[in-house]
Length: 222
Length: 251
Image 1 (cartoon, rainbow over the protein chains, first blue to last red):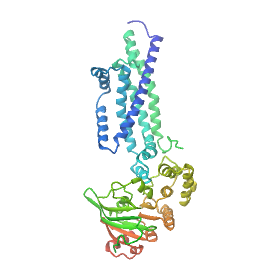
Image 2 (image 1 turned 90 degrees about the vertical axis):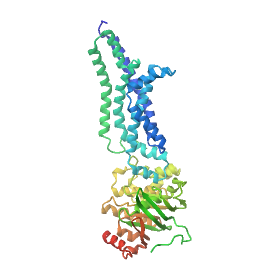
Image 3 (image 1 turned 60 degrees about the vertical axis):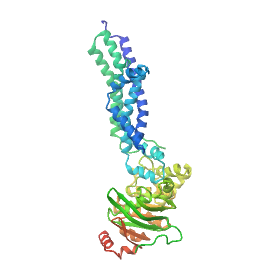
Image 4 (image 1 turned 45 degrees about the vertical axis):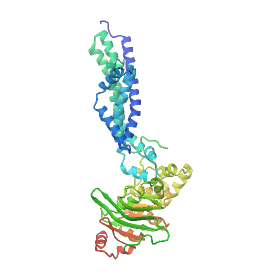
């Protein structure tokens, strides 16, 4: 204990913030891929695929991310699979984000009006052509604001990775506080950094929502 | 007044034989039969809920029938092993709500299917888009987006989009019902020109004056059955009291 906040501490926090961003990107990328697959499974013509993917979403949405982190980091080793904190945190976020993005994107795909499907069918386009050329471009436009908004949740949720010993922003704050014992100051700094990361994204999400009028805006199909 | 099937030596482009279809407990088509020969314009009329739109949608297999037989351009539509995409290359369908793709320009709307389904080259498809748009009087709208067009223009563009697939038969499902009278006129003119060119067509419409002018054959549907059928003249001198009442209120 003792000492006061110095540049080394701030460097350490900055390093933690970088890992928060890194982990968020891992969650977004992994969760994005998983979510895309989930969204397609949720609207699959096969009943079994639909049921399985719906079950996955229900289970994950009904489980705290914290518990998923515990399961992957502490649970898997008891089955003989040892994972690093980064792998555990990344995998947990992927599983978690995939379920939410899957639902957001399923909703976006389904909110493209039914007659658009029929018109594409009437033109003899195959199911994948209908999806890629007609439905997804319209769904992307619908999905963009809520997806960007959800990124804020991802960033904040990465703080839970501290419980598996992953040193991101929250955990680096804890570590510094353990030596300086200035909780109010340090956690305020942490809060400000989280806010600085999240606020611009919230703003972008808002702007996207407001201007999602004309269909072609976000799409430059040549 | 019921016509006989299989009477023509040349097989009809579209034929329905004893088609039954229910939505749950509701019988929508109750033994419907009719046929359309090459170059013929068949107009389906009837009250809302009489089954006319369902009959039309069954032709393009947007609805599956419970029993009976539908043959369209030698595709057995009622066959579960039907090649849907082959059927839909031969059949063009135009809907009440236009259903142009809002994220694509008019040109892209038209070239999409020929390029991705038929493998037509981009240049050839664009040339064809110009032709079909000229046919519906919209050659200057090539690079506009659907939302920039009026309802009537959008519907004409939707017709052009179907024509670009060079269908053997065109289906029109109440294509003017969402339009005001002025815009209705411009769409009907396009359809009349198509009929004059010899396009085989089946259409559901509430425009009785238009039906009288264009129909080679009128099918009046009532409670899921073909109640009366004949040339356009039946609209002015109906044989059944139900049709008389329908055209009486429809005019």
